[in-house]
Image (cartoon, rainbow, N blue to C red):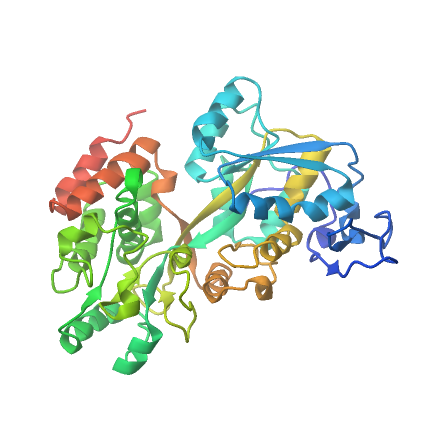
Amino acid sequence: MKRIQRRRGLTLAASVAGLGLVLTACSGGDSGDGGDGGTTGGAGEAAVDCSEFEEYGDLEGTTVTVYTSIVDPEAEQQRDSYAPFEQCTGATIEYEGSREFEAQLPVRLEAGNPPDIAYIPQPGFLASLVAEYPDVVQAAPEAVVDNANEYYSEEWVNYGTVDGTLYATPLGANVKSFVWYSPALFEENGYEIPATWQDLLDLTDQIVEDNPDAKPWCAGIESGDATGWPATDWLEDVVLRTAGPDVYDQWVNHEIPFDDPQIVAALEEAGGILKNEDYVNGGLGNVESIATAPWTEAGLPVIDGSCFLHRAANFYAANLEGYEVAEDGEIFAFYLPGPTEDEKPLLGGGEFVTAFSDRPEVQAFHAYLSSPQWANAKAESTPGGGWLSANSGLDRDLLTSPIDQLSFDLLTDDAYTFRFDGSDQMPGAVGAGAFWREMTAWISPGQDAQTTLTNIEAAWPTS
């Protein structure tokens, strides 16, 4: 897809939008009124260089409402990242996080009570909102378009685009194409990070040969009402590696059947690992134990050496509190390699900022959220790690976690071909229904690949 074209809207200087946030120590002589070269900040607040925010205009007395699925404790970090914008423009940001976000947002739009800004977690959800509420969802203004094209890859821009118009810009991001491992165990055994998919398979066989009391892989897909979703990530990553990004796009968009022979082959390839008793499930049980092993705990056997490899996203680090997550630590992750050293597909996800009002203060805040200013403010508001952005203007040094830094490197490296999580782009009945359910049945009781994918195909809505 081609980049979207610039549209008329709020005009902000691109150079200003690209400036980094400068926080300085707050002292008695440094407080100002936020004018030229001035700073502002009350007691307990860091002083902000408001000269960088002048192009957003004087928004004193205005309010922008934000509605999202992000709740505390992460919501507090979100609110903290808005402080520079509020201090320097005079606008107030009213934040509402809800666990019922996806169900309630359409209700609010239907009732004529939309928020000014919403954070949409799936491109498919965005497309459905644009189709159902074309007069409510707002096209991105010029400043937002400029930021999107300057700081994000074409793939990310396209995921916020519907029918050639940019509606949404990325917020946070994650990388799913990772394999977690023990650096110490790799060094002890003389193993190297695999550079290709075949290298990974060869490493798996080598681990079997060298370690009869362990297994190469551990996995778990139990996740309460969402049991099965980790298995969908496995299939998506393998489709990207065996069929390629173009076929992946056709599959996700249902331009080919869910049970197309290329997808069947990919699931059988994934089964070559996940359904092989010689390869799984280290420290947890047999193949069927994958269906009942909690996803949050399934990677822990890597640390005690019961298994050597665990495929999971960068955010798996949240389950490793108390362990050193680093290249020379107790556990870390490497990129799930592509079919060749030059082919580097990358699976990931994230949220998108969408506006339902074109008031100046809403457009200004959307522009802020699409800029490096906000990305840097958000990184500083998350000192414990666990957050990153695909915004190339983000200061990498502000990311305190090594896995977040590695994820950022992959997301902003043109050598990698990014694709958004497939199930998040599919209709809910498939992506969060039949896909989860049938992949669980594929593991236990051991349904075959063809039946699994044909059952999911039958669940695809006809209209």
